Length: 222
Image (cartoon, rainbow, N blue to C red):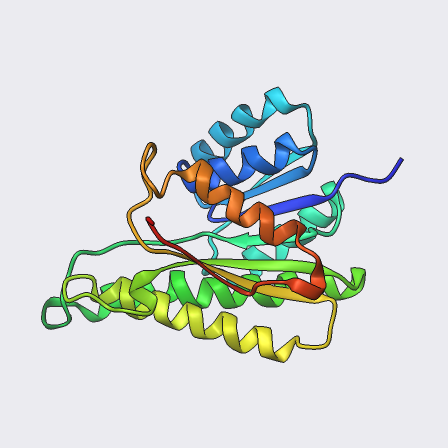
């Protein structure tokens, strides 16, 4: 019997993170969760227990490069090289450019861009040994169309989008695919941006024929 495939979620948490974990666990995948808070990890792992799949939780801050490297090594040792890695870490600060502090901008940049870079480099290193993999970044419409009072998120997600697209071009011709899911509204249960509905988009990317891989998926209400 073939070994189950493995999903790793960095920035695992309630909402979309939980929906992603459930969707892949339902299909029999092993699931590794990486989060900064141990209570978030415990809740996520407890939710997955009913699926009877291999699970693993790692406490790590995505902005800490040694911590991310250690997290990936522990995941590989526990459940194998991830077939799919989803970067889902985010922070929101409701400030315009004129009110935005250096500290707030640095934090947004660290989480959205530096954390994404740490994840990408560690994930690709592991995937190169396996000669396959899918890496998906979660952005939102602010990455493409900034709003006045969401300056830090707009800047951070814009940087993350460009990082992902640059990486996709760098890996062209390899067996590692890079995708971006752009969510064009607030993620909320029972809406067009219901976490479970969004999780299906990631599932489609993860299981898509490599020859027809859609690297840029935009999820809109209509």
